[in-house]
Amino acid sequence: MAISDSDSNADTLSGRLLASSVFEPFVGDCTKLVRSEVKRRGITLRTAFGVVEKIKPNILERTVREQMPDLLHELEPLYSEHRANNADATGFGAHLNAHDVQVADAILHVADQRAESVQNGTIRSAYGRVRGRAKREIVSAVPPLASIIERHLKSSA
Image (cartoon, rainbow, N blue to C red; front, side):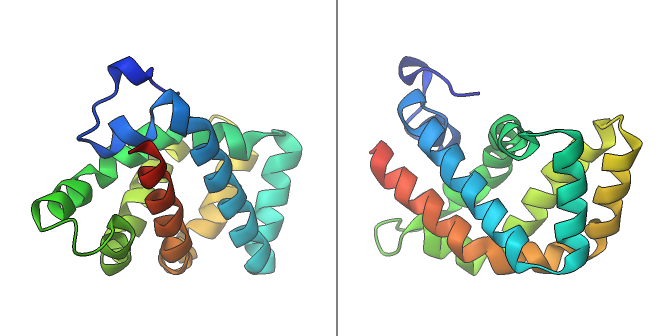
């Protein structure tokens, strides 16, 4: 859920990327990234994803949209650290890439919280089948995610 531009705090990652003028294109790019990463992965992940999408069409975009505020909150300490340590020398994307394991842990923390609240047994089972390998898969997707975040931060300036 985007926040209105008048309510955003330009000093925070959430304030910049959840601003109504940035949020929709940001969610769209993140949704495309997830979809392309799933296509590149093994049959187990592609099958689990296909099962979930048959049960709940549009689940990917809805999930990205709903979980983005929580993910940005999880990434806020990295953003604060970056800003405190001469943010002009390198972009925030480079900082995220340097902390790819922390980024993966943040994404998994948000996903695990969401999975705990899912009532549909088939969806929970599909998540459980891919969860064990998820961290290494997510770490490999940090560079394109970092690029998306960097691009949308620049557009929010």
